[in-house]
Image 1: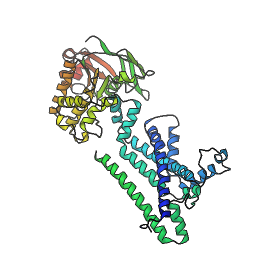
Image 2: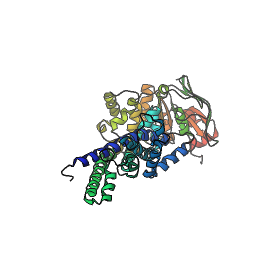
Image 3: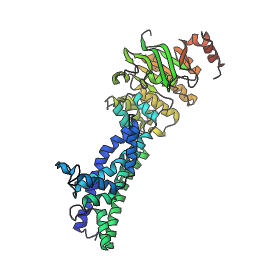
Amino acid sequence: MILTRDAAVAEIVALSLQVSGIALVLSTIVGIPVGVLLGLTHFRGKRLAVSFVYTGMAFPPVVVGLFVYLMLSRSGPLGSLNWAWLPALYTPGAMILAQTIIAFPLVAGFTMAAVIGVDPALRLQVRALGASRWQTAWATLDEARAGVIAAVVAGFGGIISEVGAVMLVGGNIAGRTRVLTTAIVLETNKGNFDLAIALGLILLSIVFLTNFVILRLQGQTLDA
Amino acid sequence: MNEALFTLRGVTRSYSGRAIVDVAALDIFRGEALAIVGPSGAGKSTLLRMLNFLERPSSGVVRFAGNDFSDSQEMPLAVRRRVTTVFQRPLLRRHSVADNVAYGLRLRGRHDAAVDVAAVLAEVGLAHLAKQPARTLSGGEAQRVALARAMILNPDALLLDEPTANLDPHNVGIIESIVARLNRERGMTVVLVTHNLFQARRLAHRVALMLDGQIVEVDDVRAFFETPRDPRTAAFVKGDMVY
Protein backbone atom coordinates (compact mmCIF):
# COMPACT_ATOMS: atom_id res chain seq x y z
CA MET A 1 0.00 0.00 0.00
CA ILE A 2 2.89 2.30 0.88
CA LEU A 3 4.59 1.35 -2.36
CA THR A 4 1.52 2.02 -4.46
CA ARG A 5 1.33 5.48 -2.92
CA ASP A 6 -2.35 5.46 -2.21
CA ALA A 7 -3.65 9.01 -2.74
CA ALA A 8 -5.60 9.03 0.52
CA VAL A 9 -2.54 8.00 2.49
CA ALA A 10 -0.46 10.65 0.76
CA GLU A 11 -3.09 13.21 1.72
CA ILE A 12 -3.00 12.05 5.36
CA VAL A 13 0.80 12.23 5.45
CA ALA A 14 0.80 15.67 3.86
CA LEU A 15 -1.76 16.99 6.34
CA SER A 16 0.16 15.50 9.27
CA LEU A 17 3.35 17.25 8.15
CA GLN A 18 1.49 20.47 7.42
CA VAL A 19 -0.29 20.63 10.79
CA SER A 20 2.65 19.58 12.93
CA GLY A 21 5.15 21.55 10.84
CA ILE A 22 3.24 24.83 11.12
CA ALA A 23 2.56 24.22 14.82
CA LEU A 24 6.26 23.57 15.40
CA VAL A 25 7.29 26.73 13.55
CA LEU A 26 4.79 28.83 15.53
CA SER A 27 5.75 27.31 18.88
CA THR A 28 9.45 27.76 18.05
CA ILE A 29 8.98 31.41 17.07
CA VAL A 30 7.29 32.11 20.41
CA GLY A 31 8.93 29.45 22.58
CA ILE A 32 12.61 30.23 21.97
CA PRO A 33 12.38 33.94 22.88
CA VAL A 34 10.23 33.09 25.91
CA GLY A 35 12.78 30.46 26.98
CA VAL A 36 15.63 32.96 26.60
CA LEU A 37 13.68 35.56 28.55
CA LEU A 38 12.98 33.13 31.38
CA GLY A 39 16.55 31.88 31.38
CA LEU A 40 18.41 35.16 31.25
CA THR A 41 16.28 37.82 32.91
CA HIS A 42 14.89 38.44 36.35
CA PHE A 43 11.45 39.93 36.79
CA ARG A 44 8.60 39.89 39.23
CA GLY A 45 6.49 36.77 38.74
CA LYS A 46 9.25 34.83 36.99
CA ARG A 47 8.89 31.88 39.35
CA LEU A 48 5.18 31.70 38.54
CA ALA A 49 5.86 31.95 34.81
CA VAL A 50 8.40 29.11 35.03
CA SER A 51 5.87 27.04 36.99
CA PHE A 52 3.34 27.56 34.18
CA VAL A 53 5.86 26.46 31.57
CA TYR A 54 6.84 23.38 33.57
CA THR A 55 3.17 22.52 34.09
CA GLY A 56 2.60 22.94 30.35
CA MET A 57 5.46 20.54 29.61
CA ALA A 58 3.62 17.81 31.49
CA PHE A 59 0.14 18.73 30.30
CA PRO A 60 -1.82 15.84 28.75
CA PRO A 61 -2.44 16.74 25.08
CA VAL A 62 -6.03 15.57 25.31
CA VAL A 63 -6.67 18.19 28.01
CA VAL A 64 -5.21 20.85 25.71
CA GLY A 65 -7.55 19.53 23.03
CA LEU A 66 -10.49 19.81 25.38
CA PHE A 67 -9.48 23.37 26.29
CA VAL A 68 -9.19 24.43 22.63
CA TYR A 69 -12.46 22.62 21.83
CA LEU A 70 -14.31 24.51 24.56
CA MET A 71 -12.74 27.82 23.53
CA LEU A 72 -13.52 27.44 19.83
CA SER A 73 -16.95 25.83 20.04
CA ARG A 74 -19.84 28.09 19.01
CA SER A 75 -20.93 28.60 22.61
CA GLY A 76 -17.32 28.99 23.83
CA PRO A 77 -15.71 32.32 24.79
CA LEU A 78 -13.75 32.60 21.53
CA GLY A 79 -16.09 30.77 19.17
CA SER A 80 -18.97 33.07 20.04
CA LEU A 81 -16.92 36.12 18.98
CA ASN A 82 -16.99 35.00 15.33
CA TRP A 83 -13.59 36.52 14.57
CA ALA A 84 -12.63 35.68 11.03
CA TRP A 85 -8.99 34.96 11.89
CA LEU A 86 -9.84 32.45 14.59
CA PRO A 87 -9.84 28.88 13.29
CA ALA A 88 -13.11 26.96 13.42
CA LEU A 89 -13.44 23.57 15.04
CA TYR A 90 -12.88 20.55 12.79
CA THR A 91 -10.37 22.38 10.61
CA PRO A 92 -6.61 22.04 10.28
CA GLY A 93 -6.38 25.53 11.81
CA ALA A 94 -7.87 24.29 15.08
CA MET A 95 -5.47 21.34 15.06
CA ILE A 96 -2.52 23.68 14.49
CA LEU A 97 -3.68 25.85 17.39
CA ALA A 98 -3.92 22.86 19.74
CA GLN A 99 -0.54 21.48 18.71
CA THR A 100 1.10 24.90 19.04
CA ILE A 101 -0.16 25.08 22.63
CA ILE A 102 1.21 21.59 23.29
CA ALA A 103 4.64 22.24 21.76
CA PHE A 104 5.15 25.78 23.11
CA PRO A 105 5.98 24.89 26.74
CA LEU A 106 8.29 22.09 25.58
CA VAL A 107 10.26 24.45 23.35
CA ALA A 108 10.27 27.27 25.92
CA GLY A 109 11.13 25.04 28.88
CA PHE A 110 14.00 23.17 27.25
CA THR A 111 15.34 26.41 25.72
CA MET A 112 15.29 27.99 29.17
CA ALA A 113 17.22 25.05 30.60
CA ALA A 114 19.73 25.23 27.73
CA VAL A 115 20.51 28.94 28.14
CA ILE A 116 20.72 28.62 31.93
CA GLY A 117 23.35 25.94 31.30
CA VAL A 118 25.62 28.38 29.46
CA ASP A 119 28.53 29.48 31.67
CA PRO A 120 27.54 32.88 33.17
CA ALA A 121 31.20 33.89 32.93
CA LEU A 122 30.96 33.55 29.16
CA ARG A 123 28.00 35.95 29.11
CA LEU A 124 30.04 38.37 31.18
CA GLN A 125 32.94 38.05 28.73
CA VAL A 126 30.64 38.72 25.77
CA ARG A 127 29.35 41.85 27.50
CA ALA A 128 32.91 42.88 28.33
CA LEU A 129 33.67 42.71 24.61
CA GLY A 130 30.95 45.28 24.01
CA ALA A 131 27.83 43.24 23.36
CA SER A 132 24.46 44.92 23.80
CA ARG A 133 21.73 43.15 25.74
CA TRP A 134 20.36 41.61 22.50
CA GLN A 135 23.79 40.59 21.27
CA THR A 136 24.48 38.92 24.62
CA ALA A 137 21.21 37.01 24.42
CA TRP A 138 22.00 35.95 20.85
CA ALA A 139 25.51 34.81 21.80
CA THR A 140 24.07 32.82 24.70
CA LEU A 141 21.54 31.21 22.38
CA ASP A 142 24.34 30.35 19.97
CA GLU A 143 26.32 28.71 22.76
CA ALA A 144 23.23 26.80 23.84
CA ARG A 145 22.46 25.71 20.28
CA ALA A 146 22.63 21.97 20.96
CA GLY A 147 20.12 22.33 23.80
CA VAL A 148 17.87 24.59 21.75
CA ILE A 149 17.83 22.03 18.93
CA ALA A 150 16.88 19.43 21.52
CA ALA A 151 14.04 21.74 22.60
CA VAL A 152 12.70 21.86 19.04
CA VAL A 153 13.05 18.07 18.76
CA ALA A 154 11.07 17.67 21.98
CA GLY A 155 8.39 20.00 20.63
CA PHE A 156 8.17 18.08 17.36
CA GLY A 157 8.07 14.74 19.16
CA GLY A 158 5.31 16.03 21.40
CA ILE A 159 3.00 16.87 18.52
CA ILE A 160 3.71 14.59 15.55
CA SER A 161 2.78 11.52 17.61
CA GLU A 162 -0.06 13.21 19.50
CA VAL A 163 -3.59 11.92 18.94
CA GLY A 164 -5.95 13.15 21.66
CA ALA A 165 -5.97 16.85 20.87
CA VAL A 166 -6.16 16.55 17.07
CA MET A 167 -8.94 13.99 17.43
CA LEU A 168 -10.98 16.32 19.62
CA VAL A 169 -10.58 19.57 17.70
CA GLY A 170 -10.10 18.08 14.21
CA GLY A 171 -12.69 15.34 14.34
CA ASN A 172 -10.75 12.93 12.12
CA ILE A 173 -12.72 13.87 9.00
CA ALA A 174 -11.55 12.02 5.92
CA GLY A 175 -9.91 14.33 3.41
CA ARG A 176 -10.11 17.31 5.74
CA THR A 177 -8.65 16.70 9.19
CA ARG A 178 -7.45 13.12 9.17
CA VAL A 179 -3.80 12.81 10.15
CA LEU A 180 -1.58 9.79 10.67
CA THR A 181 -2.28 9.31 14.37
CA THR A 182 -6.06 9.65 14.10
CA ALA A 183 -6.08 7.41 11.01
CA ILE A 184 -4.16 4.73 12.94
CA VAL A 185 -6.74 4.84 15.74
CA LEU A 186 -9.59 4.62 13.24
CA GLU A 187 -8.14 1.76 11.20
CA THR A 188 -7.29 -0.16 14.38
CA ASN A 189 -10.85 0.25 15.63
CA LYS A 190 -12.11 -1.01 12.26
CA GLY A 191 -9.84 -4.03 12.47
CA ASN A 192 -7.71 -2.95 9.50
CA PHE A 193 -4.52 -3.84 11.25
CA ASP A 194 -2.40 -4.03 8.10
CA LEU A 195 -3.33 -0.49 7.13
CA ALA A 196 -2.87 0.71 10.73
CA ILE A 197 0.60 -0.86 10.83
CA ALA A 198 1.49 0.67 7.46
CA LEU A 199 0.45 4.12 8.71
CA GLY A 200 2.41 3.50 11.91
CA LEU A 201 5.50 2.67 9.88
CA ILE A 202 5.10 5.88 7.88
CA LEU A 203 4.80 7.86 11.10
CA LEU A 204 7.87 6.15 12.52
CA SER A 205 9.78 6.88 9.30
CA ILE A 206 8.85 10.58 9.45
CA VAL A 207 9.95 10.82 13.07
CA PHE A 208 13.16 8.95 12.33
CA LEU A 209 14.04 11.03 9.25
CA THR A 210 13.29 14.30 11.01
CA ASN A 211 15.36 13.38 14.03
CA PHE A 212 18.15 12.11 11.78
CA VAL A 213 18.37 15.48 10.04
CA ILE A 214 18.21 17.35 13.36
CA LEU A 215 20.80 15.07 14.90
CA ARG A 216 23.16 15.85 12.05
CA LEU A 217 22.65 19.57 12.70
CA GLN A 218 23.24 19.00 16.39
CA GLY A 219 26.27 16.87 15.62
CA GLN A 220 27.84 19.70 13.66
CA THR A 221 27.21 21.94 16.65
CA LEU A 222 28.70 19.50 19.08
CA ASP A 223 31.71 18.90 16.87
CA ALA A 224 32.38 22.62 16.40
CA MET B 1 49.83 60.77 32.47
CA ASN B 2 47.97 63.30 34.59
CA GLU B 3 44.53 63.10 33.01
CA ALA B 4 42.26 60.73 34.95
CA LEU B 5 40.53 58.23 32.66
CA PHE B 6 38.61 56.66 35.57
CA THR B 7 37.58 58.58 38.65
CA LEU B 8 35.98 56.61 41.47
CA ARG B 9 34.30 58.41 44.34
CA GLY B 10 32.60 56.67 47.25
CA VAL B 11 32.15 53.48 45.22
CA THR B 12 30.67 50.55 47.10
CA ARG B 13 29.32 47.23 45.96
CA SER B 14 27.32 45.15 48.40
CA TYR B 15 25.82 41.69 48.27
CA SER B 16 23.17 40.80 50.83
CA GLY B 17 24.08 43.87 52.85
CA ARG B 18 27.81 43.03 52.96
CA ALA B 19 30.17 45.49 51.29
CA ILE B 20 32.54 43.67 48.93
CA VAL B 21 34.02 46.87 47.56
CA ASP B 22 34.29 50.16 49.42
CA VAL B 23 36.59 52.54 47.59
CA ALA B 24 36.51 56.10 48.90
CA ALA B 25 38.56 57.58 46.06
CA LEU B 26 40.68 56.25 43.22
CA ASP B 27 41.92 57.89 40.04
CA ILE B 28 43.28 55.83 37.17
CA PHE B 29 45.24 57.95 34.74
CA ARG B 30 45.18 57.73 30.98
CA GLY B 31 48.13 55.74 29.69
CA GLU B 32 49.20 54.28 33.01
CA ALA B 33 49.50 50.66 34.05
CA LEU B 34 47.94 50.19 37.46
CA ALA B 35 48.25 46.86 39.26
CA ILE B 36 45.76 45.97 41.96
CA VAL B 37 47.06 43.37 44.37
CA GLY B 38 45.58 41.80 47.45
CA PRO B 39 44.41 38.53 48.88
CA SER B 40 41.55 36.47 47.44
CA GLY B 41 38.17 37.88 48.33
CA ALA B 42 39.49 41.42 48.69
CA GLY B 43 37.09 42.69 46.02
CA LYS B 44 39.61 43.15 43.21
CA SER B 45 37.61 41.33 40.53
CA THR B 46 34.39 43.05 41.58
CA LEU B 47 36.13 46.39 41.26
CA LEU B 48 37.35 45.40 37.80
CA ARG B 49 33.81 44.46 36.74
CA MET B 50 32.62 47.90 37.80
CA LEU B 51 35.45 49.50 35.80
CA ASN B 52 34.13 47.60 32.75
CA PHE B 53 30.57 48.72 33.62
CA LEU B 54 29.45 45.11 33.96
CA GLU B 55 28.27 45.57 37.51
CA ARG B 56 26.70 48.71 38.90
CA PRO B 57 28.02 50.25 42.11
CA SER B 58 25.62 50.03 45.05
CA SER B 59 26.56 53.62 45.78
CA GLY B 60 29.02 56.20 44.53
CA VAL B 61 30.13 56.96 41.00
CA VAL B 62 32.58 55.52 38.50
CA ARG B 63 33.37 58.32 36.08
CA PHE B 64 34.96 57.34 32.79
CA ALA B 65 36.01 59.97 30.28
CA GLY B 66 33.37 62.34 31.64
CA ASN B 67 30.54 59.77 31.76
CA ASP B 68 29.05 58.70 35.09
CA PHE B 69 28.22 55.11 35.96
CA SER B 70 26.24 54.57 39.14
CA ASP B 71 23.38 52.66 40.70
CA SER B 72 20.91 54.83 38.80
CA GLN B 73 22.92 55.57 35.67
CA GLU B 74 23.79 53.02 32.99
CA MET B 75 26.83 53.59 30.81
CA PRO B 76 25.94 54.14 27.12
CA LEU B 77 26.95 51.22 24.91
CA ALA B 78 29.32 53.34 22.82
CA VAL B 79 31.22 54.37 25.96
CA ARG B 80 31.13 50.88 27.44
CA ARG B 81 32.82 49.64 24.27
CA ARG B 82 35.90 51.75 25.00
CA VAL B 83 36.84 49.37 27.82
CA THR B 84 37.30 45.61 27.73
CA THR B 85 38.47 42.83 30.02
CA VAL B 86 40.59 39.70 29.68
CA PHE B 87 39.50 37.35 32.44
CA GLN B 88 41.47 34.63 34.18
CA ARG B 89 39.72 32.00 32.05
CA PRO B 90 39.92 32.69 28.29
CA LEU B 91 36.18 31.97 27.76
CA LEU B 92 36.38 31.43 24.02
CA ARG B 93 33.30 30.79 21.94
CA ARG B 94 32.79 27.55 20.05
CA HIS B 95 34.13 28.87 16.76
CA SER B 96 37.50 29.17 15.09
CA VAL B 97 40.35 31.18 16.56
CA ALA B 98 39.94 33.85 13.86
CA ASP B 99 36.17 34.08 14.51
CA ASN B 100 36.82 34.57 18.21
CA VAL B 101 39.33 37.33 17.57
CA ALA B 102 36.97 39.08 15.15
CA TYR B 103 33.98 38.74 17.49
CA GLY B 104 34.23 42.11 19.23
CA LEU B 105 34.53 43.91 15.90
CA ARG B 106 31.48 42.05 14.57
CA LEU B 107 29.54 43.23 17.62
CA ARG B 108 30.43 46.74 16.47
CA GLY B 109 29.14 46.04 12.97
CA ARG B 110 32.52 45.40 11.32
CA HIS B 111 32.47 42.23 9.25
CA ASP B 112 35.59 42.81 7.13
CA ALA B 113 38.19 42.26 9.81
CA ALA B 114 40.28 39.51 8.19
CA VAL B 115 43.38 41.68 7.75
CA ASP B 116 43.21 43.03 11.30
CA VAL B 117 42.63 39.56 12.70
CA ALA B 118 45.66 38.19 10.86
CA ALA B 119 47.82 41.05 12.13
CA VAL B 120 46.73 40.66 15.75
CA LEU B 121 47.15 36.90 15.66
CA ALA B 122 50.66 37.39 14.28
CA GLU B 123 51.33 39.79 17.15
CA VAL B 124 50.44 37.11 19.73
CA GLY B 125 52.30 34.45 17.74
CA LEU B 126 49.27 32.40 16.75
CA ALA B 127 48.79 33.22 13.07
CA HIS B 128 49.19 29.53 12.20
CA LEU B 129 46.18 28.60 14.36
CA ALA B 130 43.68 31.02 12.81
CA LYS B 131 41.39 28.32 11.43
CA GLN B 132 41.62 25.94 14.35
CA PRO B 133 38.58 25.46 16.62
CA ALA B 134 39.29 27.74 19.58
CA ARG B 135 38.31 25.18 22.17
CA THR B 136 41.04 22.78 21.08
CA LEU B 137 43.84 25.16 22.10
CA SER B 138 46.11 24.78 25.12
CA GLY B 139 45.53 27.08 28.10
CA GLY B 140 48.36 29.41 27.14
CA GLU B 141 47.30 29.63 23.50
CA ALA B 142 43.69 30.22 24.50
CA GLN B 143 44.66 33.08 26.77
CA ARG B 144 46.72 34.65 23.99
CA VAL B 145 43.66 34.43 21.74
CA ALA B 146 41.63 36.11 24.49
CA LEU B 147 44.23 38.86 24.62
CA ALA B 148 44.19 39.20 20.82
CA ARG B 149 40.38 39.42 20.93
CA ALA B 150 40.70 42.36 23.32
CA MET B 151 43.64 44.04 21.57
CA ILE B 152 41.92 44.18 18.21
CA LEU B 153 39.30 46.48 19.74
CA ASN B 154 42.03 49.00 20.58
CA PRO B 155 40.26 49.99 23.81
CA ASP B 156 41.07 53.09 25.84
CA ALA B 157 41.42 50.80 28.85
CA LEU B 158 42.40 47.15 28.96
CA LEU B 159 41.42 45.39 32.18
CA LEU B 160 43.19 42.15 33.06
CA ASP B 161 41.84 39.91 35.78
CA GLU B 162 44.67 37.57 36.75
CA PRO B 163 45.35 36.82 33.08
CA THR B 164 48.34 34.56 33.69
CA ALA B 165 47.24 32.80 36.88
CA ASN B 166 47.11 29.34 35.31
CA LEU B 167 49.86 29.65 32.73
CA ASP B 168 53.39 28.33 32.31
CA PRO B 169 56.33 30.78 32.45
CA HIS B 170 56.73 30.81 28.66
CA ASN B 171 53.15 32.00 28.10
CA VAL B 172 53.35 34.37 31.07
CA GLY B 173 56.38 35.98 29.42
CA ILE B 174 54.60 36.32 26.06
CA ILE B 175 51.49 37.85 27.59
CA GLU B 176 53.45 40.24 29.79
CA SER B 177 55.53 41.48 26.87
CA ILE B 178 52.39 42.08 24.77
CA VAL B 179 50.68 43.95 27.61
CA ALA B 180 53.79 46.05 28.22
CA ARG B 181 53.93 46.89 24.51
CA LEU B 182 50.28 47.88 24.42
CA ASN B 183 50.80 50.17 27.37
CA ARG B 184 54.12 51.71 26.42
CA GLU B 185 53.86 51.89 22.64
CA ARG B 186 50.14 52.40 22.12
CA GLY B 187 49.49 54.30 25.34
CA MET B 188 46.70 51.93 26.29
CA THR B 189 45.61 52.27 29.92
CA VAL B 190 46.05 48.94 31.69
CA VAL B 191 44.49 47.86 34.97
CA LEU B 192 45.90 44.54 36.09
CA VAL B 193 44.54 42.47 38.94
CA THR B 194 47.17 39.98 40.01
CA HIS B 195 48.37 37.85 42.87
CA ASN B 196 51.82 37.88 41.39
CA LEU B 197 53.79 40.70 43.01
CA PHE B 198 56.69 40.19 40.62
CA GLN B 199 54.32 40.66 37.72
CA ALA B 200 52.95 43.84 39.29
CA ARG B 201 56.49 45.09 39.67
CA ARG B 202 57.37 44.24 36.05
CA LEU B 203 54.30 45.75 34.41
CA ALA B 204 52.86 48.52 36.55
CA HIS B 205 53.62 52.19 36.99
CA ARG B 206 51.55 52.24 40.16
CA VAL B 207 50.34 49.52 42.49
CA ALA B 208 47.30 49.49 44.77
CA LEU B 209 46.76 47.14 47.68
CA MET B 210 43.19 46.10 48.28
CA LEU B 211 42.07 44.56 51.57
CA ASP B 212 38.49 43.82 52.59
CA GLY B 213 37.15 45.87 49.70
CA GLN B 214 39.19 48.97 50.51
CA ILE B 215 42.21 50.48 48.83
CA VAL B 216 44.79 50.49 51.60
CA GLU B 217 47.53 52.18 49.65
CA VAL B 218 48.24 53.19 46.08
CA ASP B 219 51.64 54.43 45.09
CA ASP B 220 54.34 54.39 42.44
CA VAL B 221 55.67 50.90 41.95
CA ARG B 222 59.05 51.59 43.51
CA ALA B 223 57.64 53.38 46.56
CA PHE B 224 54.95 50.71 46.99
CA PHE B 225 57.50 47.93 47.22
CA GLU B 226 60.45 49.72 48.81
CA THR B 227 58.99 52.34 51.13
CA PRO B 228 55.35 51.41 51.77
CA ARG B 229 53.51 53.86 54.00
CA ASP B 230 50.94 51.49 55.44
CA PRO B 231 52.16 48.65 57.69
CA ARG B 232 49.69 46.31 56.00
CA THR B 233 51.32 47.05 52.64
CA ALA B 234 54.72 46.43 54.16
CA ALA B 235 53.54 43.10 55.53
CA PHE B 236 51.90 42.17 52.22
CA VAL B 237 54.90 42.90 50.01
CA LYS B 238 57.22 41.06 52.42
CA GLY B 239 54.93 38.06 52.43
CA ASP B 240 54.32 38.40 56.16
CA MET B 241 50.60 38.95 55.83
CA VAL B 242 48.71 35.82 56.72
CA TYR B 243 45.23 35.74 55.22
